[in-house]
Length: 485
Picture 1 (cartoon, helix red, strand yellow):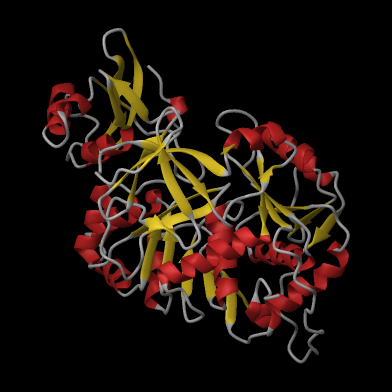
Picture 2 (cartoon, one colour; picture 1 turned 90 degrees about the vertical axis):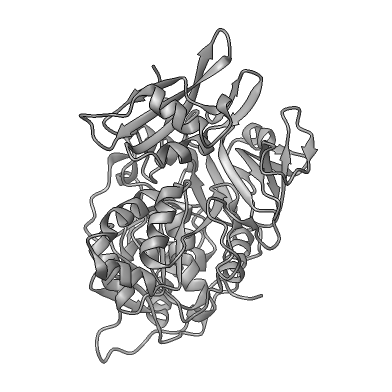
């Protein structure tokens, strides 16, 4: 059976992980992680205190090599959320960097310090890691959802989901061992950990983690040999803002092979600003904790700005109407809920057979995301079913397309669109904006006319509310449930 990380098994001498001034080759990662595997053997599950460090990366790899499910724990979790995650996942051990203080919920567990260091000069290397590859359905990671509608649920991700997603992305992005990825994403989530750390390790390439996002650091690494950048829309928005006054950043991005944005939709005006300044387009992809990656724009395919591309290899995707009936429409207008099935899916929610059963229909996972499909098959996300599908005047309207148009208005810096009860329309469209000039915000009529000039008139906002900032979570997603009149 092919190992999860072939380059570790082969003890490749190429650089693998760099965090600040700490670097390990694939051989050194294999040795550092392999030294922990004997201690992990027989553990039910292990929690990993997922700071953005080399220690976290090595700890997760050690658990994967040992075939023990790892639970990445968000260091920013509140007391109640953390207590729930620990009680629900019931880890028998916690992995952390030496000297790293742990909160009470984890401090009560047996602890194993992760020594993520290369061997001292002249030291004799230990034996190669030669553990059998566990079966594909073996749980690899338990990643907790954001918990927007209740306590977070632990999505059990098997090894075959990791390999299916990473290998499909290698096809779509032409990802090889020659690539050097740079990112500054957190390591307790799919984007930063699975794509951003395990992806380069599986490909045999390398990753440079910045610790914290900084446009100067991005420019430095891309100018020094990095070929790929992963980020979220907030990061690309900051990049777009910085480009006019930073020719070095523009040149660095122009030299990158691949720029990927995920975790939320990248507004069209940021797409255009980045492409205009660098000649490079940002590739978007679509995934969830439960499904890993479902679709992507292909790096060498035609531009599909504003879409998340087409289904990845092995992924089946369909749209269903409100009655749950699947339909085929490639008209760029018909809205339906995305359902997917394939080897990229999780096996279920830990300790929640009821929630698992409710999440599937005849083997198809119900994403709760609403989308339309363009004539070329590309998927265009228009929002979440619970918060972004607005039923107004007999029409079904996706909030996402209105948000994109609002963001093209020069007086709007940030925008979110929601629906609110209306006795006449059923729901009225409400625009929440952060003005570019707080002292002179655009008027309600002005924005309504701006939207009606580019979309159907019934999609214009009926109410506009100004904010200093939009509420966002750790991944930069707007928390619309916090927006109410």
